[in-house]
Length: 339
Image 1 (cartoon, rainbow, N blue to C red):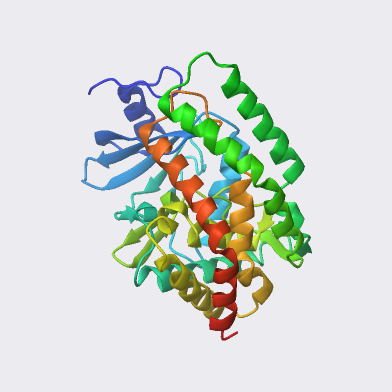
Image 2: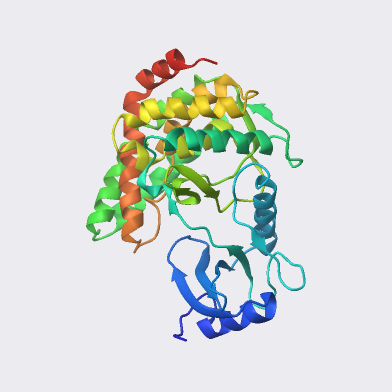
């Protein structure tokens, strides 16, 4: 096998040995998957032709174990990949810290939501949130919308980022753009704070935690799997709706996202009738304010991958688009809501 460095000094041969001794899986092929920021991932094809997804860790394993447990819990409501336990019955292997999952065929939602994908995603998200609202870690609780984004801290973060850019003798083309984008967003933080201050109290509960388009697997217009859950902790329902419904890759496709979001929210409510209308109707405002106040990925140390540069530009454009269209979008959502 070709050697490939993973975390530490892990090679493909060492990974194959860990799969055999920890899982009884005999790897015939190992393919690096260049996705994810906190793990090293591989597609594993075993000697029977079955495919697996191996996720190698380099961090807090208790945190990762909690995320795996939340995935299994969510699997009672939405499709998730099944985790394979080790031969000792553990969720994470000890010889080489990793988890092993069934491999899900399909594509991520990074191409954006369009057409029949809107109601499909709304249905899945409604089922997921309804189920997670019963998670024992935290009961649904109302919190002030101003807690969505600490504007004072965001101002400080942007000031520090802009100062670092200005202290450099030379900036790459992307860094020069990022500095301008940071200055533009910094000037809009007062409006972001006002948006949040004008919203009612919103629901927090256990959520997926990172429901962006790369973590939503699709087969055609159907949701094939929801992946990469975070450990169970409370967050704003409106933000998680916005995270996928107003994903930058969707917003930059054009105004179709406005009507599409209304379709998503209707499908969501059909599956989760107990959801508060205030949370649904505040999703765009929350998404706008939260994104305006985020320095990610502008603050990522260079060099950053080309894909992340593209995402940075899309996220900036989406934040400005949501801010510009916010009054119109909110009014259209209110008029179109049947709930």
